[in-house]
Image (cartoon, rainbow, N blue to C red):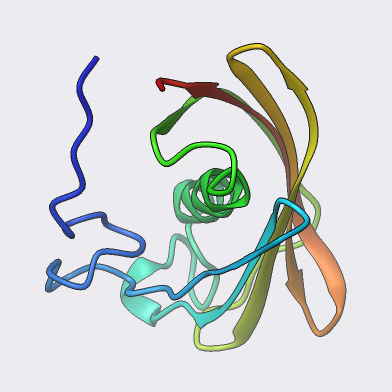
Length: 130
């Protein structure tokens, strides 16, 4: 599979006019973080971020946690736990860390925090295409 970055990623692409434009920090310990406010136009129920958007954010921070291992990783599997409704227009923190590498599979744990409390978490398997 050939993958190419054209800067139109819905979450982080700076060329995507309707995207979220999230900026991730990749750390030397195979972790990644970002802070972002999700606009109201990404809600499901009133003032609550749509669950698909929450899953997408956890997916993206998981990919960024793998950046020191591979620049070409794709999600093979993601298991999301929703703990609390994520409010729109409120700063959230995304964080993820690689917990294991098995040949071409990278296991990552990710969290979405609001006011220092976990609102959603994910266990993600990233497939390394390199």
